[in-house]
Image: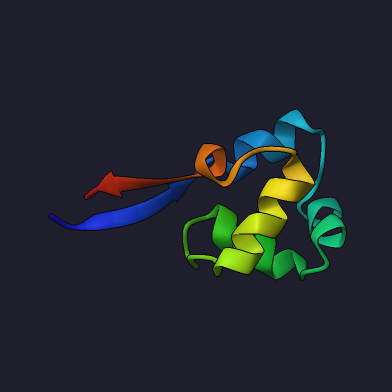
Length: 69
């Protein structure tokens, strides 16, 4: 079984009416970090995943899921 990390960051970000840059500023990371995680190019560290959750007022489990490929 091959798994990949999927995320709901874009949906939560748009629901909060935030741009990638605004979310990045809230998190203290670059816009590129937000973009690459949001697009599934990069899997975030635990610290960055927690920053996403805090900034979007969601749980890590709400934002990230393992999916079978």
